[in-house]
Image (cartoon, rainbow, N blue to C red; front, top):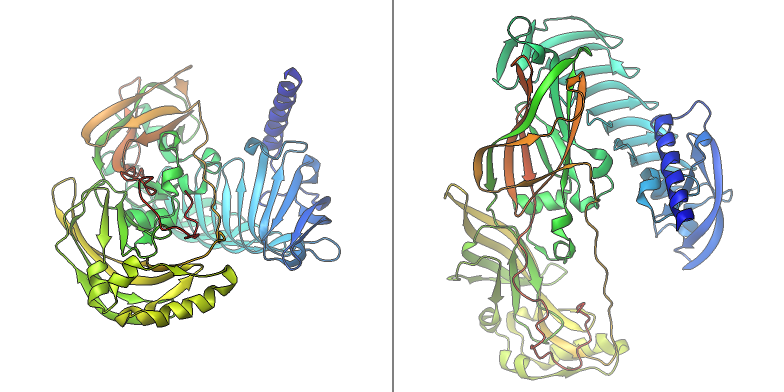
Length: 604
């Protein structure tokens, strides 16, 4: 055990040394070279595994990093050429040499995207252990074309790159809220552009080689605290030379589960922090289809999930000021009450199951729900439309029964409820499905029925309309499309025909972050930020891990007070915190009697 601890400590020291040295596909060393290793490769064409030599372009061979190439499963022979150069989509990861593969702390860089001849080329995303990342186009191992580049501090460059260097039209947003829109040459601002200061003042600027040489930059300091300007001289005090920037801490954000990562969006009026996952934000906004629930949220330990924020207080010219206190000043923390809906298809227990479940993982009640739908198959056939109205309001879940609609469509529901449909084997399922369709009156839904393994299903395709009430008691009306399968019958066979999957992970632990447990129904409150050590500073970084008990929106600023009574505040900040409502029902009621012989596996 002592030897193991010593070994891990040595790896930690080595990792820190590698960080300090820099060097990767974004910051290559002067002497890149080809690197080779032997690894196990899966060949999708032959469904076999073999050991192959893999050669990739190493941007910093002096670091002694190890790499692993994980090709897309569909690539034949792992995408390798005869001399071991990978091409195609996959994941290329660099680790501290000699480190265990299970330790995420030793990952130096990860590239996910297209390779050509052992080098990044095409679209790809590079993530570094420092938190820096670049998503965009690559050529011959370097960024080339349109990219989004976020550096370690959280500054965002969105524009063109050439040979791995910022070059061309771009939008650059610094973490203190300043926005520059213009041109870059050889990595620095060069040419005419527009600069917007954190307080909102916008002016035309001219740059040469990274220096502002012409423009109408006001001799006033933009101050987001007052939404206007403050004299940068008299009576402004020590605070005048300081700025406050805030951004999601990408270093720890990137080692969280992808579903749990947060994004920084620097707008003209404020800075927003929100979930990076587009699927999760669609769920939040309710502006997409209601999807089938996939158990993902139920498998997350939400108590171990945080949004990690880094706040930098820095002097513009390196001059020190004496800090007296810092705080997070909240104007409001309010619950987000909009319903977040998903569907649960009740298939795999009873052959005829004319129902589905609508789940609400938002925190507001679903009011006056209505459904307008047709029976449809996977080829696009649709029956006439049916309506379900007069349903009760509900909180977390509601079972929607479509038995009446199936009866109105002309199906013999009595036979469907009582008869069992046997099939001798899996190999005969297709013939058994034809016999089923010919043996029973199915009315208007007959053409919409299709087979999935041993189940005969139809899809309900339509729209759900409902209302909800926000934190100010205002009523909103929503309409969302949905598609959900309904089980009409089961072809009962003796063999199992499916298997189940596994779960997910949560956020990494971050002991050095101030834990901020946010309320979700409170206004005008402050949280003190400890100021430790020497209070005469030119720069100070504070880190926070935010969490709350439910989905909510939090508006605040960071405020720093100086010994002379002056103060500086950040641009307005807004956190969209996501935590879904827990389930209030059991998918698999142990008291429920399933039809014997149904082998469609539903992951019990």
